[in-house]
Image (cartoon, rainbow, N blue to C red; front, top):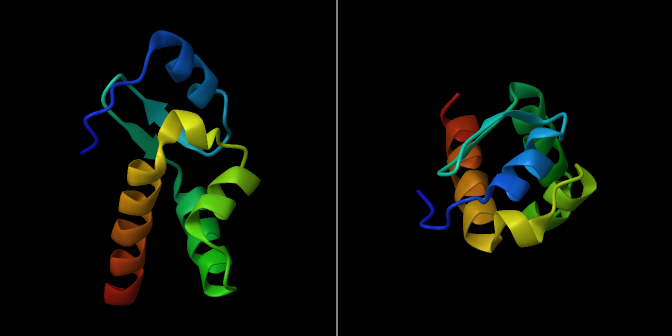
Amino acid sequence: MSKKLFSDEEIDVLSKNKYVKSVSKRGITYTDEFKSLFIAEYNKGYLPTQIFIDAGFDIDILGNDRIWSASKRWRKSYRES
């Protein structure tokens, strides 16, 4: 889990994204729709950061570590299913 905590303002911004199921100071839960979209776009050759940008996320709020951790987790889950 990321050590970066979200501010109240960042939580407000993130919670308005249609691909966010929930968000707290410590973490973010993405919708299953976004996870599926992510895998599909990744398999087309798009980089994780670009997929998040295209989905309307502010990568300055999320940070690269959080993006790459989610990417690794979802790709592993996809390979195992």
